Length: 320
Image 1 (cartoon, rainbow, N blue to C red):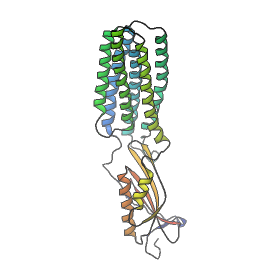
Image 2 (image 1 turned 60 degrees about the vertical axis):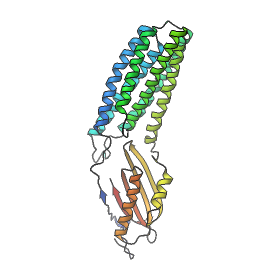
Image 3 (image 1 turned 90 degrees about the horizontal axis):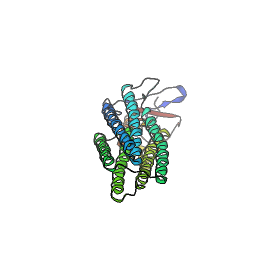
Image 4 (image 1 turned 180 degrees about the vertical axis):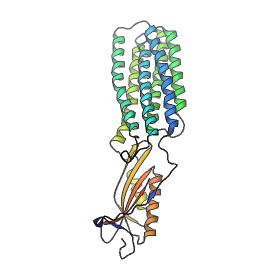
């Protein structure tokens, strides 16, 4: 319907609705490249775990065993992340699942973070036992294996780095940083043991690894938790200022922004406008979409209401 001023809008009372849809066929939500990276990193770290665990058991280094367990949980984390990414990439959604299965990404990342918590307890317990009862360590082979573990970490980081990382890739990246720190701690501790003969350095290094692991878990849980609890993924006051700076926008009544996964950001906004024609309203709507896109929004629903007249009327526009 059109009011006396000429602004076209739609009245909820008679169920008349008008929507304009903009589709970007080039928009991607994570791609198979992420899945391939995670699969390769998973395979490399499983091999690294087997080698480090065998070395730690054979040569008596609890720090190396701890680093091996760290690598195992990381490998499982990468497998879960790969599975979530693979499934989400191949199921784009339906009317029942309008955003596909992209929520698997933050779910997998959250579970990965949770898996790190019991590992911290295990490492601390083993470190405490070895601190009370130190044992002799095979220093030379332990150093060689730890250097191999560090090479695995560095190679995995090289595979993941470059470009914008998904949440699962970030989770894997933080795991790898923790692994690399653990391998370095093992190398340093074993060198100190070899030089000084003070074997308690080994469990102390293992406890330091536990601290690195706990930091990694916190990063992953914080990022995935922010998505699950629908935290606004950017500074809301900046977006409000930019939208209200658009010509024709009087005021933002209400707006929300949240993430489906790390690659998909959604927003809705109810905006009061002073424009008086349909073409002016379309221009305002497109400018608001542009502002939201600059802040990383992929899908937006904009509702325009005149800043005068019947407040029950509005003009809606959806962009996907």
